[in-house]
Amino acid sequence: MSSSISTQKEMNLAHASGSGRLFFLDLGAGRVMSANPDGSNLKVLVNEGRKLPDGLVVDAEAGHLYWTNMGNLKANDGSISRSDLDGNNVITIVPEGGTFTPKQLQFDRGNGKLYWCDREGMRVMRSSLDGSDIETLVDTSEGDQRPGPDAKKWCVGIALDVEFGKLYWTQKGNDNAGQGRILRANLEIPNGQTATSRSDIETLYDSLPDPIDLDLDLTARMLYWTDRGDPPRGNTVNRAHMDSTKGERSDPEIVFTHLMEGIGLALDVKGARMFVTDFAGSLYSANLDGSNQKTLLFAQGNLTGIAYAELPAR
Amino acid sequence: MSSPVLPLQLETVVYEKKGPIAYVTINRPKVLNALNKTVIADLRSAFEDVRDDSTVRGVIFTGAGDKAFAAGADVGEIVNDTGVEAEEKTRAGQAVTNLIDNLGKPVIAAINGFALGGGCELTMACTIRLAAETARFGQPEVKLGIMPGYGGSQRLPRLVGKGRALQLILTGEIISAQEAYRIGLVNEILPNANLIARAEEILQLILANAPIGVKLSIEAVNKGLETSLEQGLLLEAALFAICVGTEDKKEGTSAFLEKRVARFQGR
Image 1 (spheres, helix red, strand yellow):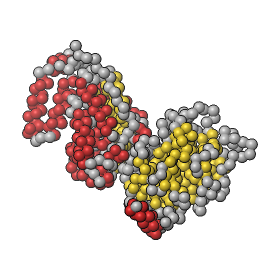
Image 2: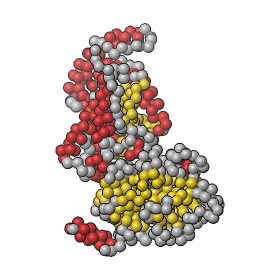
Image 3: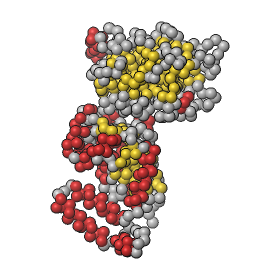
Image 4: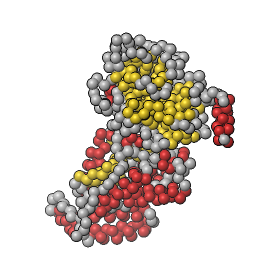
């Protein structure tokens, strides 16, 4: 009872300050955590042990957190969990066997859909918000059996441009082999085509060291991603224009460097800032152009997916 | 008749022997080889076996994967510790670092990536440290409300001097392999792909020498650092005398005079 009142006050305070809340994952300890955008008020929301959580998304309006659990990378035991924003009422919405190694996650509130990349499953997938109606939208396997052995076919990061009907994802390539790509396709499979044979897939950027997570600034039409490869181009946050036509694309701009295995990325477009996690355990913030870099948290485990949300007043 | 020796049952460490060299590899690459109770127990088992196996004369110690040697403690395991539990864990970690430091056989740390917190402390217990170009080093514990617990506050100043040790420990900052080399924390920097081969090359150079001379040299340096110069010199003289009394001294000096390669027997 008192904790409920306290939680409500905290949320009201967060909303009143207009600074929202960060939610992020520690893969090593299997935890879901949250903090204020300055790193203060760190809370462990869920502490359930070793399922290797990787991608996370917040439905602030419904008061839900969704996250992926990779499971054993060689087994078909990935899953997707949901909880309330305070970490209570954890349920499984996509049970083990529904996806192989689910990675980063996004959601389309208007259409009630979750989207995620399945790395060893070599696909981009979608379901309803309750986990039903699972579909494969893109199948990159080219006939390889799961678990897919070829890292060039491994789908990792994902982002949605619902207004323009577009889906963006990364395929990481072998570590530091310069095989990473960022791809785009329509949200819906073109008529008469299948997940394995779509004609609408475009490669936007290739020869990247090891691209991981994606986020979009839909106002400025800018694509942002983390790259986990080696410096100088890796362990960075990069950005590039979303809408450049082929032949007009300039090289990506590096806006953040010296990450230690950069993984998660979340933009706060309204606040003109980004939040970044790395696998060595740090949480960072910076302006969207990379200025004003700060380390908010350090050595917090093996941080993966991150999301920023402005919580409605209660 | 002694009972047959059971093979080690290790969960988180890969332990292999190839002739006179043992390879100890922390094997939790999915979590950057983070150190937990099981890793510490497995390392203790592996290094005790190295100590007790007379056929093993040197060790290459590394982390699985190409990202981390060991990126610190498993945070999920320590967040709920009480002071008593923490002391037990610290003492267990110190027992491993002390075991490595005083093994009497050379241990070369092949540092393939992050060596942070307890990971950095493990490397500092080794005889020699080689770093990959991409390696990173640090004692970040103060950023977590704690301090080094596996020997960092003692070994780091002995390696790099008090001022630099305090700067690293108090700021919790992470330094590059190049900076680690500049301050003397590591001996060499190599491309990651060459790290194990170079460790083997150095070990082969050491293994060509008299085992007792090597062992007592390690002891003289380690114990000498704990005492005054005067006492260190007395220790050196005593250990030197032990070497002079060995068969290997006869073999070494004879081989030199006869212009041939010495064949040391370790006695």
